[in-house]
Length: 322
Image 1 (cartoon, rainbow, N blue to C red):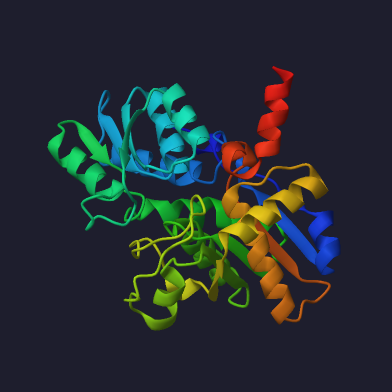
Image 2: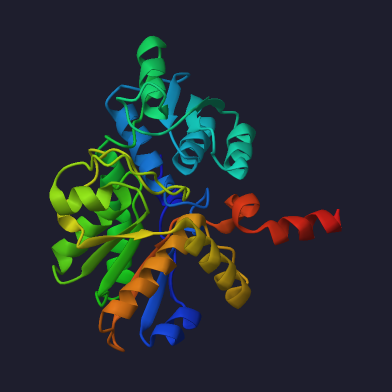
C-alpha cells in the first residue's frame, strides 16, 4: 500500500479569518484527502498494521465503530483491497455519511449511542462483539488502536511543521477519539514545546473535565451533538499531556459560525470545523494575540457531509435545480 494516497494536504492562510483577528490564521485542509477527511490517515495506518501483523487476510471483514468518517476511510480502503467491511454507527449519523458508506458496499449496523465498550447499547460494544463472534474479521478499534495517533504523529504533524516553516504558534483541532490532537500535538511539542495545543469538544463532553481533574464527571451531563467530536468516555489513544486546554462549544454557536463562514467565504464547513471557529473566537477574546502569531486550524472534513444539518438552504437550492 502506498501512503501517498493520503496526506500532503494543503496548509493555507485564510485572509477572512486573518483580517478578523489581525494575525495569521492557517487552515490545514484535511478534506483534500481521498475521502475528504483527516480520518483517511488512521484508517490507512490501522489496516496496514493489521495486514503486516497477519491479523487481516484477503477476503476478511474489517470492523469499526465510527461516526462516519473513519468508517468511510476504512470502507474505501477495504473496497480497494478486497476486504469486506462492517461499520457500526449511531442512530443520528449524518445521512450524507451513510450514503457514502452504502455506495462503498459497507454493511452498516445502527446502535443507540457511542458511549464506549462498557455500554451494551454502544457502537464500540457491538463492533467488538461482532468481531469476536465472526470468523475472519478484525476490529480496527480507532479509540484504542495506537496506529490512530501514530498516523498523525508521522504525517499530519510533520506536514504542518514543514508547511509553516516551523513558525506555528497555536494548533486547534476537534477532539473525538483524540487521535488527531494527540498525534499532531506530540509531534509539535517535540519540535517546539512552546506551541500551544488546543482541543475543541461539544458542551457536555467529558474530556476537558478529565484533562483538568484526571477523572470522569459524575453529574450525568448531557452532551451537545456535534458530529465527529465529543465523548462520554476516555479513549486510550487520547493523550491529555500534550494538550494545553480543551474548549467546550455550543452546538447552536457552531451552526451559526458555519452559516457565517459560508456567507463570507462561500465554503461549507464541516461541523467540527465550525466548532473550531467558536473556540477560536473565545480564545482571542481572552488572550493577547500577536500580529506574527501563526494559528493553525485543522479542518477535519468538508461541509457536503452536513448539508441536511448545517446548510438546508443549499439543499433547497439543489432541489430547485432538479
